[in-house]
Image (tube, rainbow, N blue to C red):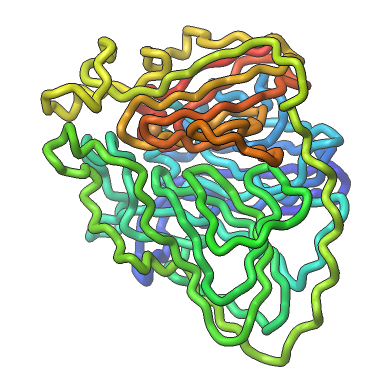
Length: 451
Ligand code: C2O
Ligand code: CU
Ligand code: CU
């Protein structure tokens, strides 16, 4: 769906319905009966109206992940609840200098985010470049995972899978199992890749092709970086240039070690999936045939990314992401605690699970803050902040030299990451949370207010 005149009117209907998935009939969630939902093509400065109709059996809402828009009222309000059988009119106004890039939309109703995304509710948002990169084709690849029962329904997951973060046993690209893609040798394509999996990390490879990363999330590098693989935590996006060689190539995801609860759970990893082999899982197959395409023109220089390292910081904060036994965590880090009971695990930030009635962090609008994101648990947590992207300064004690901006930043097990955030342009309440959405639904989320 394209905004022709700077205004886009979109109708999204969230419902359960019949769909063909992996060659069989399935009964899954979707927006407008399509998996993924329609792609929204926007430009900086656009105004988008989205009428969301809830035909699900449970409350839902909509979040425009990564967009730099107001968190208030009927804009990107993470606290709205849309009851079954009702509709809600969202209106998003993108600033004229909104960063181009790859974004996405998905439900954000606390307690059922993982279930609803796992079941099929997600779609892509592209904010177009003022100056396009010359390519022969643009593709949007929304990567998701789901598990289906024998009867084709969305599988329910165990308490253990929720603790680990569920991983579906079907990996889909645009709702399809291992789709066939075609390109001509020498052609340069632009692939917008979204990790819409509930908990699964993707380590993407497309061997034998020339891959150049333009950026991750809304962050753009000044010049494209040659890469051999792309690591995407849940919620991350890649803006990738693919120049095809001859032959065929398989887009694969390799296994990622994101930690486990093995020390506590008697060696059971909790997920219940058989791990993929060392070659990973095929996501899509690219056939490269025909006469060579025209040599691509140069990639236009990108504006220098903003760098907050030389900016005065108003406040320093530490956010501690922890998993522990018992409802209040009681200071017991799970890496050292004993015991078993699976329903007892708590997911906290600074010792507290999410409470929509409590504001955890208050920041001054316009301020630049430096946050240390500390993970005391034996699993990775991909930390996401709404509305304002984060510049990564230091990862596990190692400084990050060139300005790197992301809105989902992975915090490895028992490690920390330092970031800076400029709380520009908007006031209001929104959230930060772990983007392993089972962890978010279990309480690993905090409320932030800019004022
Ligand atoms: Cu992708 Cu708070 O979300
Ligand atoms: Cu988000
Ligand atoms: Cu987590």
